[in-house]
Image 1 (cartoon, one colour):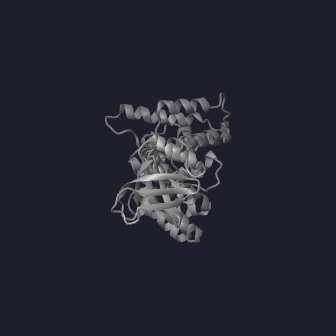
Image 2 (cartoon, rainbow, N blue to C red):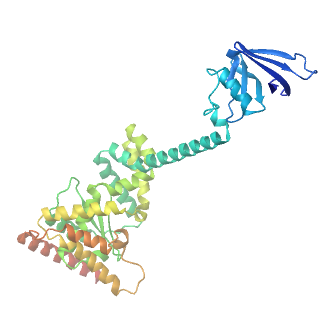
Length: 373
């Protein structure tokens, strides 16, 4: 049969005759200009071409291809296949190097794209969990030190202007609530008319005068404080801050550099007002508030009452911005319905505690009136 024989050294393809023998292939080039017109390749040198559906075979020496035979027809190619069934692929699988074919190239591209997407997903999962890993490595004592450092930073920068007498009254009110906590919260009243309250890592809870004035009942204020305590207990604020410098925190913690950790968090604490909790964190804080208020035998419906009070005030306001405590703690109708669903049908209320709370609430309101004069 006639074939095209190409020597890989000069890259030139020559018309040749091919003689199939049991021990190998005998090739005679028909071009008189070829220096060595006759060549023999043993069976062991025959290998499939790495290109699918090309009707070609390679001839190798020293483990690498050095020549190629291309056939003129499918019949000739099939004849060689049948002569060396153990050396060449069958007609359903004509090559082993499929990644160099057109179809194989597409397959390789898809593999690379999937691998790249997998790396992106892995990177996202690692980065999104760095904050959680940093938190898991740190004891709660770091929360407390960081919270105190952040609070001092906020005071120094003028973000918090504490009314110490009002803070004392707020502390007295909080003690009457009797909420269970693994931390020791410190209550701070901030001279600000903004309707806002926020918690810092480890226990500092800052409540603005504007929010204190908005509270109509002791149960409403107790609901706010219980909700903020939920963020402290579940380390939500600490987790949000830790994400900002998670890699540094993990390394510093592993090295035992607690002072460096606190310093970094205190610096990150400057962005406390830009932090916002996700819906899961808000649900967890609500659940904590409902549970702890119920355990303390305080009417947990005060939490909903506070939301409704702030919403009514917003509805009557001419301002376009919603109250800050609602904007950072979104109080949608769905969320209020969810809280109502979790409320006990008949919450047990401690009458004596309710009277003490009312008395402490009255002291707080009196101090607020003095501040306004």
